[in-house]
Length: 377
View 1: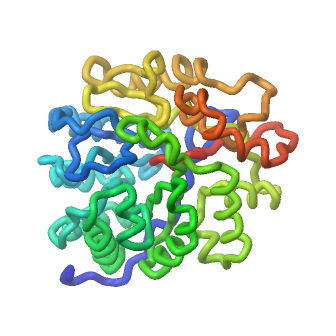
View 2 (view 1 turned 90 degrees about the horizontal axis):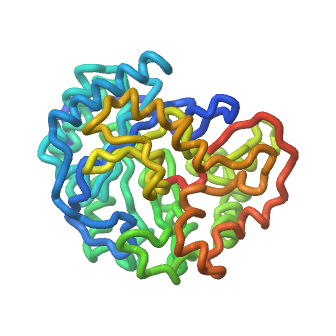
View 3 (view 1 turned 30 degrees about the horizontal axis):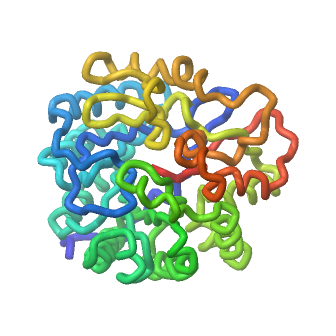
């Protein structure tokens, strides 16, 4: 138990989006994977390896400072997110020092994505102190791929489910904002609704259902990629039957985006790859637009040889121009550009990611909003 914990107002849901006219995110988002090292060996992992090499602590602290300067200058205080991924970020020897630096600056939102198996009360205490220092602008994303141990263990090593759930309970008890990431594959489609029930029981803020993409370690599981239409229809059925709490839990999903369109409040245009404000940095310093779009030739630069501001400036020019949707075309407006560029998917009709796009009738577009349709953050 965290001593002195009082009722807090959580930050709430998050949707990665931005106006297509500006080609920039509303809330800037730097995703940093300083190391691919991990304490687990999950079958579906999209990373190329779990090597222990990592960015030096000094360069990571420098990135925090540089990103803060960019965010405050272009979006104002808390107008951007510093997001630690991995591998498993809780393995980083300087994880706590990064939290201290963010607390000292007090200008950036914080996210981290973890498997939750290393989250003891000491970790929760540190995250709680950071959350207080940032006035509640901290969100912890915990990856759990099933509503019970048996389903979760289809992808992850046995024994991790209870540890991750216990970590989530500690976080929510401390008043910290928590999201759940759930990778959807052919064998856990029936678990989508039970997983939503688990999320409600755990009192998390948001659930991100991520369709399995066969990359990295997961390339050998290509046949487990689910049908995109079936995933959409199952989540849509939950949305249709759900109340405001369910709708909030599914914020950022395609169902949420489609609902906003039907209300006339916004119109989706394309995914946000190549937009200003979205960067993914890996252990060798290479910066791409996002975790799903990190193919050779699409780098924005390298933060070991260039200032972050210079790398950031390359997004809307060098990167976006190579991946943009041709002017006037609307057939890709519900598709993740990174996902559809995976060579394995292009070769296999039964894994065609365009299925949900053909299933939905496109509407007339003018200026609109662009979204992340992979939920891979």
